[in-house]
Image (cartoon, rainbow, N blue to C red; front, side, top):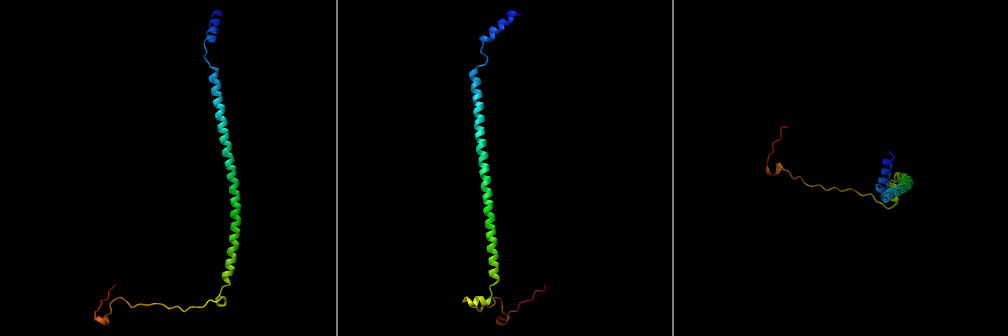
Length: 122
């Protein structure tokens, strides 16, 4: 048994089953990929935080614009309710008289050509 274990030890020492350079290379690749993924994660997270902050500022601007529009609409309504004919005359506007254009009919005139048109029963 002792002889067999010594042969096995000699055989294992003689054969290089595991290369330490390959292990180090694989470990470096794993750490490098984790580093790259961490960097990408930090960049994406920072971009999302920046977008959230911009969205909040845009929402605040939209609220202020909405308030300004509401104020302008109420001003417009109050001014439009105060407009009447007397105000228009005082500003120099004049009332116009409408003239409409008419034309003669294009159909048959039974009195001119003595043509009779039969009435539809419906």
